[in-house]
Image (cartoon, rainbow, N blue to C red):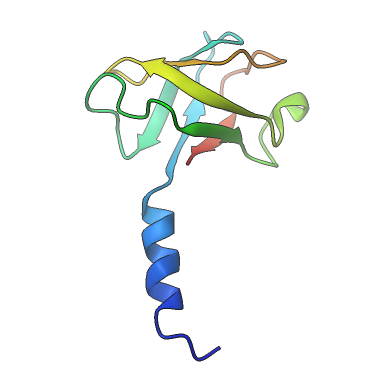
Length: 96
């Protein structure tokens, strides 16, 4: 449509989203991650944000499942409210 701010607003919203994937030693409440963009820099950087697994992630039982980040390390290990299923290596997600 003719809203000149729409593209700018969409870009800003997208840049606030963190994306990444789990690695093999994750559990239902502790997620080891790789490829976080932007990368983790300090402990609790993403505290309180919502992590949602992609609709096409590898583990079918995690597709669309969401949880809250309750703490994290500077290395990107996320502590979350327990998931119903432990993620395998390679499950992709977004943190909003």
